[in-house]
Amino acid sequence: MTITIFVLSLLGAMAIGIPIAFSLLLCGVALMWHLDMFDAQILAQNLLEGSNSFPLLAVPFFMLAGEVMNAGGLSRRIVNFAMACVGHIKGGLGYVTIMAAVIMAALSGSAVADAAALSALLLPMMVAAGHDRARSSGLIASASIIAPVIPPSIGFVIFGVAGNVSISKLFMAGIVPGILLGASLWVTWWWLARREVVQVPPRKSMGEIGVAMREATWALVMPLIVVFGLKFGVFTPTEAAVVAAVYALFISTFIYRELGLKDLYPLFVSAAKTSAIVMFLVAAAMVSAWLITVANLPAQLIELLQPLLDSPRLLMLTIMVITLVVGTALDMTPTILLLTPVLMPVVKAAGIDPVYFGVLFIINNAIGLITPPVGTVLNAVAGVGKISMDEVTRGVMPFMLAQFTILFAMVAFPALVMVPARWFY
Image 1 (tube, rainbow, N blue to C red):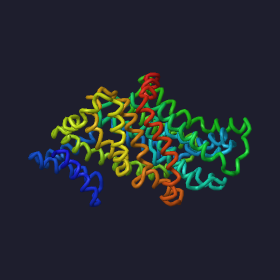
Image 2: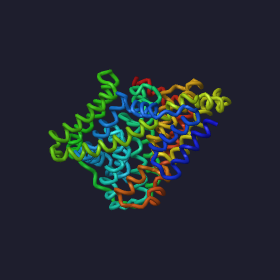
Image 3: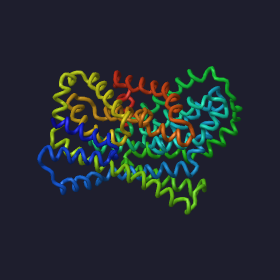
Image 4: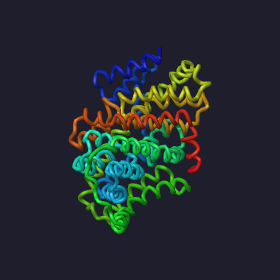
């Protein structure tokens, strides 16, 4: 009965158009009424405590780093470097997109920020070269969702806080799976674009490649600072976010000199607005998470899934399908906040490594950003690229299937995640 009230109250609130954060609060109120423990003071206390977390400070700083990266010239220089390296190959602009997306993923941690930057920089070039507009936009959208998987990742920060899992280990474990997602796009793009008749840019000389690399060096150093700093314990994930934001500000204002003092205010405002949305979602979800624990919903779910606990792979497959379905209707952050407190006890009861589960869970949620009808990244690409949602959705399908193939391969073979992860621990 408790599970029914939880699901119906949440879905019912969303169905009548109530924003997700307020739907989560209403769901919490419904559970409190059902448990005969309604108290507005307890509700308010849990709402405030929901965002009172030191690790969550990483969210606004990574948001700011992404804003500065796009406005301060770091993204453009990365694209120019990728263009110099592989732009001359047939279908080279697609490979440039994938290469740039993987590098930018290690800078911002935000799929929407990367999607906006890549759409503005590369989509016009791909269309002008003769590539199919829908397919090009689909590639950009699917490449952008690598950002929540390769560190630094806002998704890993939120999951780590909600599930009480080491954020540093999640960051390290996400490196190889993120690269595998990029590799799947590389192969898919090669297969789709091999017969296209396109205008190929001329091969760059070694001197031009050297110039592009020198100009992008400051941008390329940033992910190395974050990864090595976390690996050797120089700073925590939260401190890494501060380092990334300060580094991006310094490079953009004093090295590249593309940002002045008057340009910083709108960037800070934009990052603050986005962070406020995320933090309010986190706070509202923590109310529901507390009530989920009080109502003992995880134990009821464990009882329902008892036949699968002896088969971790089958259980993971079931969880991934559930997450996939939820991800078509909810954005990444609310999905993480909603499902993590419910699923983590089930995962632990089955003896599944929480870090392994976290990586697959975040990949699944990242792919959810390009699954219609919600598809936040699809909307970003459609808006920036001035293309219809139908076209973007049609173009993204083969790439999304390739990424799902990688996801379910990791479900079948956990070593694909955990063996490389231990290289970086």
